[in-house]
Length: 258
Image (cartoon, rainbow, N blue to C red; front, side, top):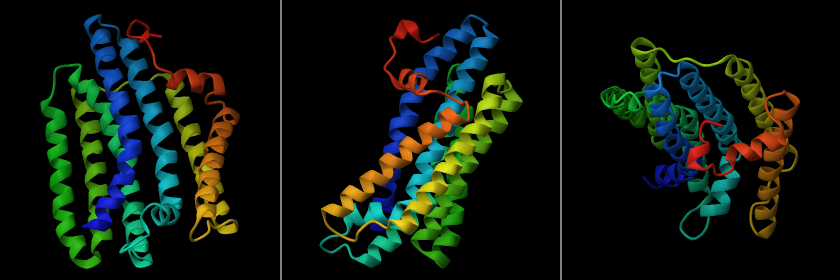
């Protein structure tokens, strides 16, 4: 229970920052576009939501997977929390991190239903994912313990996202613009390259086991990965530094269409 609890707390941080904020902005924007019958505006909103979901969730997922052990060791390994607990929690975190893109996708896809006053489809998708997670948790948890339960949660999350995509395509059809079709593969490539670089850095510069040096090295690795990801996005022609800053800057309600 403790291994899953601590691992889940680390996954909730990026999920809360990205998913909740994105859903809060997208629901009113899509509702206005639908009331005005602006198909292009709906497609733009859905495209930007998908780009934001992939662009933030993928590097967060890879970062948590690669740095799972150093992060857990730094935050929790003291007192009764031993090195064995660190290894088990890091393993659970690796599996739970795989669910992060799915959770963020659900946050970005649900507003398309809410804006159309359809709350039943997201509920049904969530119940489907929950059922899948529960059934698999009973089986995998019996054989693999906490890691099996974490893997079940990840499969359930992806089942939820897949169900939303399927229902949306059948009911009204998700539409993304040409810019999203061009950017999404490049965003995924940039995230994968960043993850590979971070993995190589861990091999050649392993964080110290304890002390202030552990905090400094881990902070440098995270900052370096973020900087590398930003450079890769620019090199791949996805976005520049100015556009990135403007995208995350708080926007006035009247400027949402921009």
